Image (cartoon, rainbow over all chains, first blue to last red; front, side, top):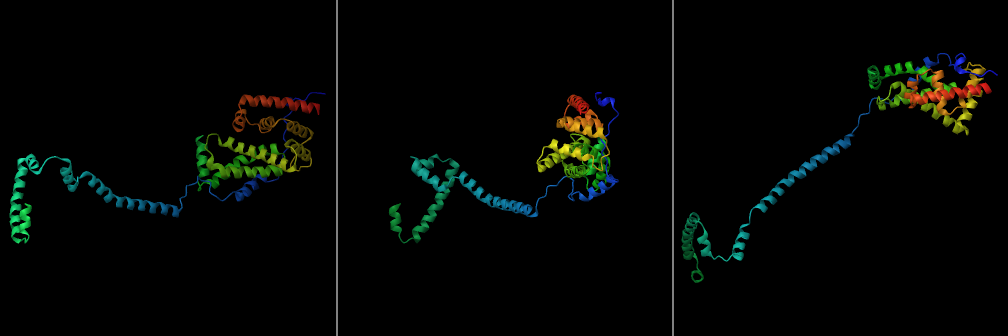
Length: 142
Length: 180
């Protein structure tokens, strides 16, 4: 038997046929069957309710922050200034200086102020002595 | 390549996509039909698979990154669709894919859309006896007359491996036809 050689034989056709006008009708039928959804690249859709929620949360956050500003400012201020009462207590309890020594330590310009204050205090004291019925007690105390 | 990019842009643009898709259909429907028919053998099955292929192409155009040519991307979809179709049909019938194809060849004589003689049926029987990859390579090279480079892009196999596959396929077919 003569061996079959593919390249020595005439080209063998597949023998497959199609119905008449198959390709003309195929395109028309296919277009009708294609899904209606757009094939363009999908755009990310953010729902209105979600967008509104984000806006509301942003406004709330801004309000909370603005309310926090004065409180934070006060806290900072308190921390920086030394309370007068605390200072007095410290001087009383933690130092061995008496009142005269303390005045002696004060610079001259400040001692003038203290002297003026003292004069005012003397005048005030006179008024108090005149008007105060418990004058004897006050004299004993001084 | 630039033309292909422009064509893809037209396919993705809602204003131009209908016209562009009609052009795509016009260009690919005949070669794709032949490609699919060579795999599934029956006209009705080829018609179903061809429709599914174009629907898939339409739905997935947005995902086409242009890393391969449009031609090879579409052929790859068609090949996968045809092979999946065959496997599903065989599973539903409870037989193997080879048995299903042999059955389809036996039915070819009665098929009004097959105009072949004994040697054509013998050739089909010889092809079915080949491994799946060799079948594909032989059909694409011999019947569809695609270049090795094109087949390489579609099947993702090197040109050298394709040449070897085709050579083995031809030898087996010649032996089958001679002994039959």
